[in-house]
Amino acid sequence: MSNTYGDWLRDQREAAGLTQQQLADAAVMTRSHISHIEAGRRVPSKEDARRLDKALNTGNVLSSFLPHDDAAVADYFEAARQLEQQATVIREFAPSFVPGILQTERYARAVLRTAFPPLGEAECDRFVVTRLERSKVLADPVTPVVWALIDESVLRRPVGGSDVMVEQIMHVVHLVECRRVRVNVMPFGLGAYHLMQGMLTLMRFEDQPPVAYSEGLSVGKVHDSPAVVEQLQGAYDLALSDALPLKESLALLRAAAREFGHHD
Image 1 (cartoon, rainbow, N blue to C red):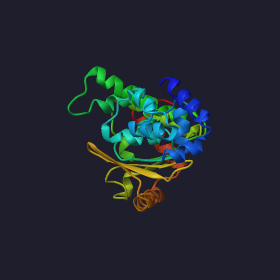
Image 2: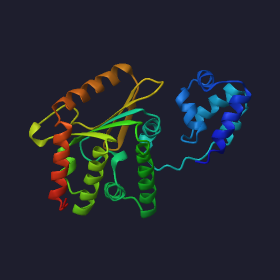
Image 3: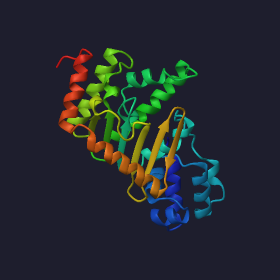
């Protein structure tokens, strides 16, 4: 989004003599959330804008001139998408597909073509662009820390065909080798294990409590109850303890790519 809105918010905050933390406290938000909005990395929700107007005594200006966020995601994922952009640590579990922030363009398009009702080409393009925008959190060499726990079936199923799979798997290999992400694979031989029921994302932040996001077929939910998040973190840790170590996982990724026709 254009950063005119973020600049204006910062100007109003400074004119009111408030720090980001003081404004966050007054608007019942987090300091990092305010920081992201001012930097142009986040579009505030309507409720965020309403609280900011009240805290800054700006009438309804921030609400009225709210930028349009044209990101294309499923409605149930929108809250998780916004949290993902603020997280300092992201831990993914993927039972069916490569996690969204690790997907290549062609792999993402192949996944989106499984939607029902089918997406039109223009709509599919919008979803692909949004998915690739999400992956930009990896542009920073350090933050967020990203761990991905991936079922072996994700590496074996030819989503989009052999060429697409080779490109996708080697993209993940590259991210692992340059130490940008850490990947562990749940091998077939393990049998049943914790987390198999659906996708899970755990997120930690600089100045707000951790949250979890779980997803099934056409449904997703952000969990912010401390008890629920702790339970899901425990299930993730238990599954991770049964996964292949990083070195062995990387070898399996390379082996899967070779099976799809990749030549070192």
